[in-house]
Image 1 (cartoon, rainbow, N blue to C red):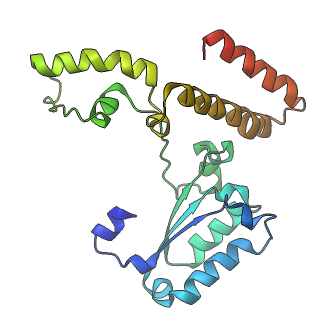
Image 2: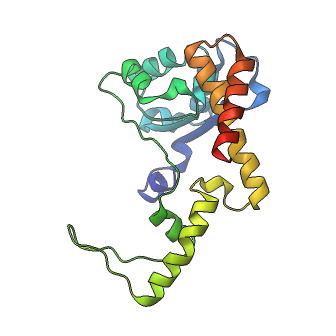
Length: 206
C-alpha cells in the first residue's frame, strides 16, 4: 500500500479489509458484495478511476473465488489477496484465476535477511562473484549465525524472549495442522493428527 501511495495514487482509492475479524461471523452470503458496495458508495471516485483492493483472509468467506472473478470481470480494480490457509496455495489460485494472477509466497528470513534485520549492512557483490567481508563484518556474521539458529527466521517471533518464541512457533505448527492439513485433506481423527504433531515436535527438540 505504501508503494502504491508513493507512486502517486490516491490513498482514498485503496481498501484494506481483514475478513478474520470475529465481528463478521457468521459470514453472510452478501458480506463480500456489501463490503465492496459500501466502499464504492463512500469513495465513488475509486469506482470511476480504479481501486486497489486488499483482502486479507478472504478464503474464510464462502464463494470468495466466484466473488473475486466477478469483481475482476466487472470492475476497474487491482486485487491483492492474502491468506494463511491452504486454500490460498498457488495451485488453488491458479485454477481459480487461470492466467490472471501472480502468486507470492512469504518464507522465514534467510540468514542474510536476518543479518540486515539486526542492522548489519552487507554490500552486494557483482553477479557471479564471491562476496568478501572485512574483519569487522566477518566477526559480526560469526556472532550472528548461532543467534540465527536459535531465533530462526520467523520475523513475528523476533521481539519475544526465547520461551515465548518457542510457544509461538508451536502455535504456528498446531494452526498449520488444525487449519490446513486437517481441512485440506479431510482428516477425520483430529486428535490423532494433533498427537502425531506433538510427537514430531518432541522428537525434533522444539
